[in-house]
Image (cartoon, rainbow over all chains, first blue to last red; front, side):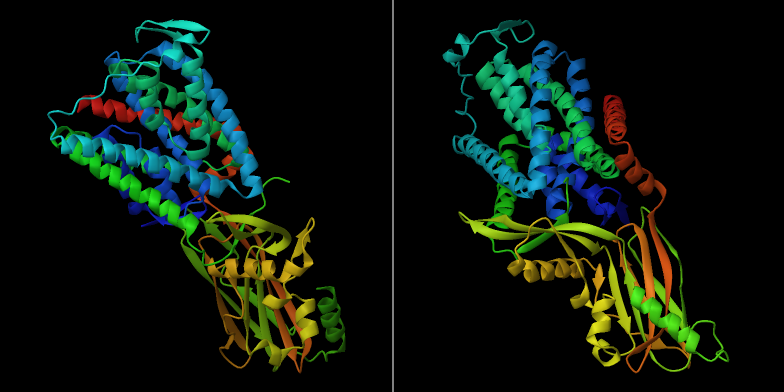
Length: 305
Length: 246
């Protein structure tokens, strides 16, 4: 069944969208990752304009992260103070990102920047995950111990220290502020929540306890993606609510199965598979940039003056 | 168009009043309104008409004028990057052409150019500065792109005769057809001269949920953004409730 997407201005098969939503939901449920860094490239590969893919994905992540935050909140796994500081940074970062996005769009360079960002980040995450799972599989699980959270001592020299009771930390507020800011930029430009960057940074740079990391990052992502949704709606009119809701319905179903399957299967093997998938997508993105295009010319609507 | 208008006006005056039709050529569409709904995947529109006496018919359907930027890619450090660009205004968002015989056999080049009939006659205007030397390449790329999207059907459909004076043709509006007011112009030519013409409008609008979403997003972008967030929050909350039960 074909459905016409009012903002993307294209007709796509409803079941393909639902299927894509559930596959990404399944993967995110299974691995506990956000779906943005998988979904945005999928949408772009489908032919959805990159700007619409980014704005719409931000909108979808609002829903996914609220569901996540509520689950973690019930278990008391959200450091609201830390999250709040990160939100402040995130709002500023996403505002800068949205402004950059519009400038780049007027210059005709936004597709390039989105693609390059995905190649870099997907490549990086994929390689790290593959390395991690290969290490564990090779050491046959037993000897594999997560390295203890490294303490960056220069970090403790920074001013504006704040006490974060939930995380048991007394650190400079500039750190979560800066991290939130960076992720805000990524959210605006790539349509991702940025958990893949935030979570390791919170563990290794801030030294937060792992139990509160996911809930707190989701808390920040919720506010930042909501801000990105509004900013993209105002600046670019590229948020397709219909597309977001369809993807979301798929994702909700997929995530349920994903969580169930993820609980049963051997994590490190699966992580390796996800790593290969992520690397495959990075390669596909890179190919689009490197291969000689069929047509040297592209046509787009005139944006701005 | 003014010249064609003057032409037909003069001709009408010169015509004997025994003519059966008030106009030498009359045309109409199978529908004047196309609603792009959520299930819209494209639509065939039939144009039919009556001509007086013999002659050839040319049908031109034009979509609303738009502005478009054409960018040329260049390889920089191994990556294909957009470099030179040229912006055009007065670009029809849709263009379809049909005729009873090949255009060059029906009319002379001046007439075709004057009325922007045929891909070579489309007169896009360059906005801002543009390198005149590169103009043709950019213009051709613009037409090529629209052709690939099914928006330009140039030199496509034939006009067929149903009976002696009845003719019909079809053109296809793809899913990506722009909204706005289209015009279908039908020319009747005899020995290379315009004997008459008729214009009939076509309104393409978004309808239903799709229209509401599109209009709201463009008219009230801030409110739309907040509503999008609100919907997502409700959806997220609802799915969280479902999980909790499970």
